[in-house]
Image (cartoon, rainbow, N blue to C red; front, top):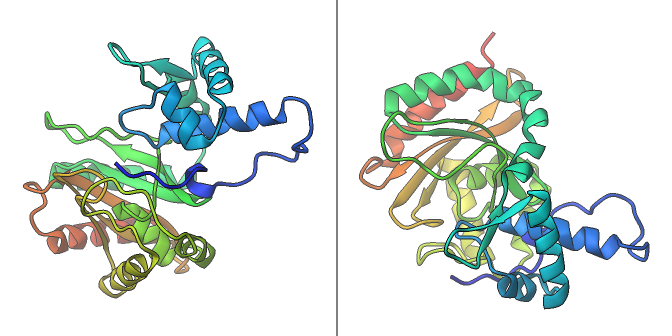
Length: 265
């Protein structure tokens, strides 16, 4: 797997503390580690964290062990890799509960998931990434490893392409100025020119597809959600295997119908 960006997502600056202030670098590094682990499916060991985030290994080791002691990360069983802990996951839950958008979408997403037998997600932009603000799990045995609060890259996900196509233009402008993107699979878009062509296609079709671009064998279809005044607010998607979603267009039609009901008076 090819990873290029040193700073995950190029997100917003942390607070207003001067970089020269005592412990400011440690705080920035700890937050960078948490963000990077949030975007990793398999977790990362301390050597990888040090190399990918350009943090001295000794410093990375101290920060990770501190985060582990506090419950924000945990070491995976039979592995040297670290992943986010439940305490980190819980940080955003209070905010998520207060989002009227996620509450408005939930009953419609439940109907959609029951009809398609696929998990549904609602995502909004956050910095130069997307974040899930609602999820409805599918009733089957096959589960998708996603959760409310999880961040994702925009160039390789269905909801990400919708956020780029219909969201704030500044996000797309910043992303296309990057020379190359993280490669997850052989299908991942890794050049600005290819991404611009893809986003133009998404705008024309009205839906976006992650066609095994983040994970082989998995396909995601997403559509935009607009408020009654026509303002874009989120991306709505369903995810499944390529066998469960052989053709994106019929699924996109179901998604459009659901998205249209969320803010219907």
